[in-house]
Image (cartoon, rainbow, N blue to C red; front, side, top):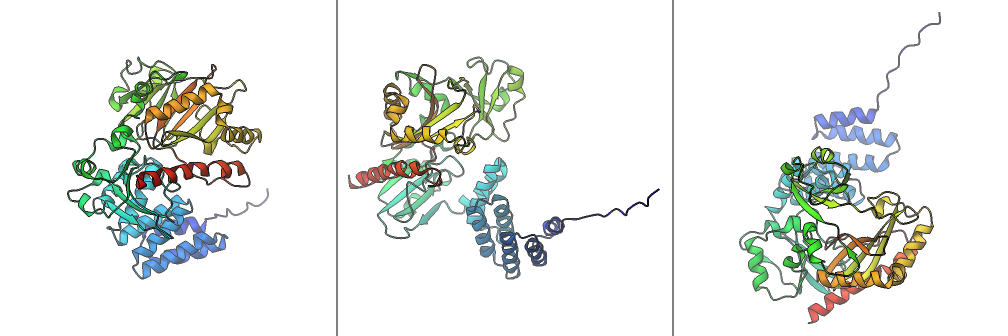
Length: 443
């Protein structure tokens, strides 16, 4: 019988050192060792972050840790950013920026209660933030925002190079906050999710009643875009299908009558959900009763429509409204009913991009004159200065609405090599917004 070979135990040195750091997080020695272990694995960025964290801990410098975390956050490395923000807060529990960004990371993970704790810690200390224009100031914009997700994405609309951005987190407005606001040329209500912005606090209501600057996206008009109100808001527009929607509180989900007004199949969406988080197709009363809403206290139930095209693909179009005028933004084509641009794999096959390019170049021709007239009517009915709509076309070429509100993301981060047509057409949206802003300020 051959001799037994000895059992060799292998341990990942990084994992062992990470465990040590978790047990004793403020000891810089662990991070020095981690830096060496990461370097040995060829992970230079991780090694540098651990080395900088060790130096920050040795000098008890929470802002240095905050900067490490923010660099990771901006690079899309949320796990690493979360770790360094938490460590920065161990040194300085009152570091507002760390609380703000950590809340955003936790909310994206679905840890809503924990995110709320950090939002409270940040915005109860400070609710007004000023970012001066970095190159040449053209306008000073007061942005009314809600803490957390659900705001109009402003980065591309209000570039910091030419815009001084004064952000007031209106859901944390305190007495006297309005009197401390810096001078501004226009007010842009970026709190676009009605689930998170109603009702307005008295300080904000008083401010809006007495302030004289132009106001974009008045809160009362944004409130009308709540999902269960949208069918009524858009009623009467020709060639349109807005599936019925009801809002259900968590405790009512187990009531077999909760979906009577909708029927099955239906789409369940937790309130406050963005990017498809928690959204699912429900086929029966039993499945609905067992649904997990995560930490949300309510959900929307929407009648499902099978909107597959004859080629068996699902198409989701997005149009952005600037001052009520429609601009084609993107087309996502997927084999799954829950279509998102980031998961649709628009690179393969190449005909998807060719079809999207035709939509952006001439949306009225791509959709048909009848459907484009319907989109135009929707923009005027929404009556918002900035908004968007996600939709498809049904078998009769009617517009099938998924959602229409002010929280639609619009950016130009797509590769110019793979999506050259976007870099030709999408800037028209930013130019239209800048022109509207100039008109309002000038008027």
